[in-house]
Amino acid sequence: MDRAARLGVDEDELEEVLEHFTRATYEGRTYQHLSSSFRGIERGTVLLGDVVVRGFPSIPRVLVLETGIPAYFDGPLAIEEKLNGYNVRIADVDGVLAFTRGGHVCPYTTQVARERMALEPFFQAHPEAMLCAEFVGPENPYTAHEYPEVDSVGSRIFDVRDRETGTPMPVERRREVLDRFDLPQPDWFGIHDPEAAVAVVEETIETLADRGREGVVMQSVDGRDMLKYTTGVQHRKDLAFALSLPFDYGRDFLFSRLIREGFQAVEFEESEAEIRERAHGLGEAILEPMVATIRAVRAGEPVGERHTIRASPEAVEGLLDHLAAQGITIEIEAERTVDEDRVVEFVKISNATRDKVEYFLEGGTIDE
Image (cartoon, rainbow, N blue to C red; front, top):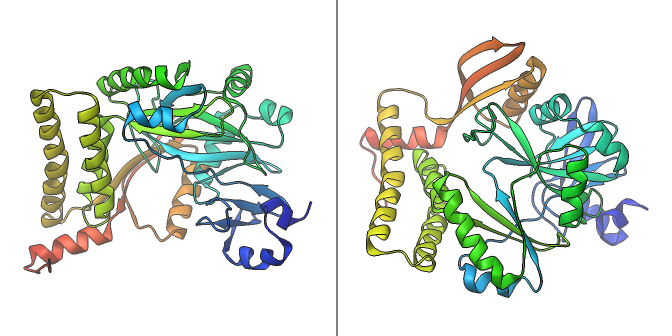
């Protein structure tokens, strides 16, 4: 099958399509990746010679469970935990490679996957598959989040797809296959009819919120239709993060999370006292991190995303080179060696927020 057919486009469209792919190299191998979806081809789709690794589709979000779930699903759906980490696709293309949502080979995740995940038996049995995984834990370079069960960085595989077509493996078969190969998965809340699923998701969300977790992903049993829903705890964490870098994240980011909070408060039939408590939490999430950032800039301290990473020296060095190649400025605050791993604490410097805050602190004005 030629490249046009593999990408699902006509032969006379191929040249235009390929112009939207960007070339990159990893370990001496050239590949091409698609940074934005185009002509029905998913963002993050990768070409390595004649091999296609499909991007992962965007998962829509529902705001009202009671009406949204029955409207979206016309049959039974599976419910699994949604974790707060970063999303990669792992494929074996003459060697294990881990691709980011935008299609870059992530040197750090590739090395961690090779070193810490027993992938060879799975790919021997399923050579044309890709594993869609969330990497979580306090020591990762993208989305650091504390999980009691993860002491550094760990993975949870939430989907298995054909790497060329993107066709998902049915949910129950996927869980059975991953169990057989002892590969980690998200927590499971069963399969339910759409009407019954509403109450299950509501109860699950309340339990997850009490534990400080992110939310759930709902999926038709064939794996083709997906929907997500998140806890109020996660909304406030998102807001606190965004407002710690107020000039890096747009108003749409803030507005969407505030809207989620409003719909959730109504659907969960919260009392006036509960709504006041939710509002109090929102206020803290919005103001406190912003004040901390302004004070940090005034004191001449670096501002940005703080991370601690722990991995082999090769994986850490690959990550630092990768970040530099992406034009990201980092400041290393501390590093050490623990059990042959290199541990680095660093800040991804936010130039936009730092420069804007400095400008206003020095008397700059804003047009509104």
